[in-house]
Image 1 (cartoon, rainbow, N blue to C red):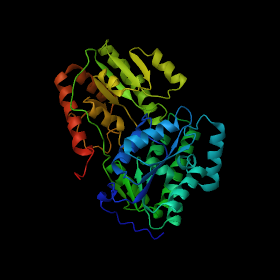
Image 2: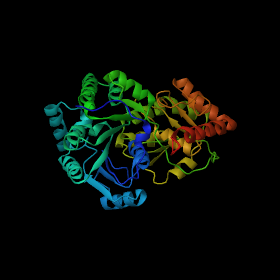
Image 3: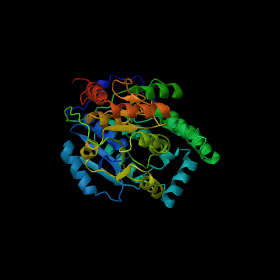
Image 4: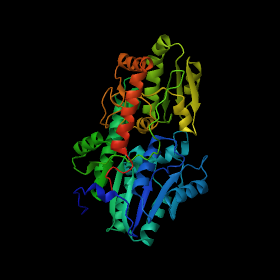
Length: 416
């Protein structure tokens, strides 16, 4: 490819109001906002779209009304062009989709994360838009859809192709493969997936002009792994209109919020329930732990019911009600990459956070300033107990997180 890989100024990403058309392609449309990946897509799209943007994304036909979602997109973003494609996004319990994905992995040498999102209808939609419109730029959200870049370059060489990278996907899978509690075959498959992701990225990078990472740590790591300088850090804009409003409920309670279909979330939650929670309950008998998140498996729900002091809320429509019940939020992640939307959410609701150092990777935050770190069992327990016993510390940390969010991830990071 003849793509110029010199990273352009970040201001190039800012939405233009000059009548030019652009294409924003997402592997999953952001409504409903029920997981961190969709929330990140929402915030980036809100910042980057313009009057001529064509939004293209998959939606899960189970439980999602496409007409309602399209109408919300048009109203909230003043869009004229919304193209929604039905797609079975959660395929782990769908044997036919799993088989199709495995076949594509073998035939194309693609990783699972890309093969599961291969869609002839997506390709036809992109072809039609590019053929009918004078596209100025194309924004591809996440690594999953990088396979569209060569097609777009071939159809419209003049369009500038940008990608938003949410995570260092290969590193997430490698973390999974290093967990010795998993079987050898599972760990071997994870190592293979990591190699396929890296090969897939190396093959497709030549067709992309600029890649923007949510995390500076991920940008540095990906540049090193892939031998490029293409990955740049672009702080995710975070839109919120809540003033600082610290308050702690009368009954001390910690909360966790996130999709329970995402393996790193489950891994960290189980570590907390098995190791941290029993000690906190002994120290604070009235303590309660609130879990908000969809897609818990029956065995996981059973564990929640059988664990004293735990209340499982399932999917929560009104996050404010959830945060109002919490004295603090925990983020006990042991693997993964990218920016934790749940941490930014907690900051925006003026809640103190206790997290592992892995969970805050990519955030310029300090222990005891914007949140409390707890890497070991003892440190995590100690951080929760310190907050439980020190209202002034709760207030200081909550204020620090809120101010950090406004300063670094405010909705207009460039002041334009």
